[in-house]
Image (cartoon, rainbow, N blue to C red; front, side, top):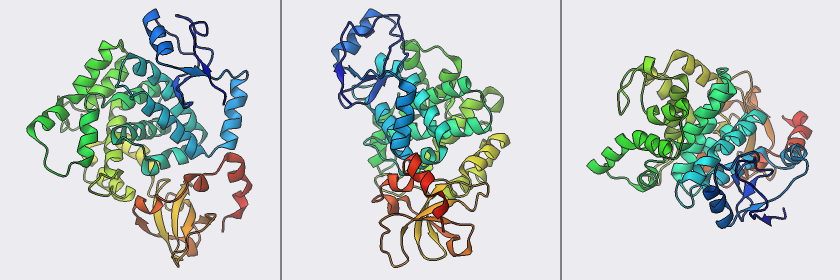
Length: 380
């Protein structure tokens, strides 16, 4: 990609951007079609050192990129773009770029939801706070789509998920490493952060009700046991409830510096049994269909002794398609073969920790579209 330094002659206030605006590493800051609202923001975009790569046929370019790249890596690229927004703290420019990130999340979830779900378990970025919010957005998009919530309503829910913790991101990153009890000041910051985040967004000009409600209510629960206002079900929109569930699930399956994350099947069981009173039954049903017993990215042990990673969901939640990463002897497979867990030899016997997948290149589990299609008939 040959990047061109953005100048004042390339964009105009009040006009849609004719290309993506990128940082020096080629990561998207503002998406094609975004309208710059005023001269002050135009000056900030140009003066910070932004770039663009004009593509004559954007649809063709997108299709070629999808065919040539691992879908998991495409998800990781969007996550990196999202992370770039916070390099200088969350400000008006970062806030303006959130809808573009939402569009990209919806696009890759629509194209291929399996590697998107896998990213919740396997993708790692420098900041826990960012990968947590990004994973919650992925989860929310796929679950809301399963529940047939309209696209526009999903968009504002995802924007809420991506910005729900802007009032405590530094604290969230600090707590990732902390293995001592919370201080009274930390407890207060946690309780107040939803309202603080909403106030920050309103100060930046965000006025959409669903976006703001999701941010303010993402810790409220339908039985009234959440915080900070202890609202109940009738006061909580579907989007807020789904993002709340996504927030909890992603937190449970994510590791901390001092402990491993919960196994995904254990986290799901806990949410749908011990915490069942906090989840609307319709949302719980959607959760089961989306996540299932073994969501993509889950590391499992097969009946033949192989270690594998769940690659694809099937209509049977207990029989996903997996790719074996280690033989029974412990030797790593150079090219992870597909296994059909519906066959007795490859039945799933145990769920293992995600750390066993750390050395694996996700592109081997979710190869580019044309390569994945080429070996569809090769599963044993």
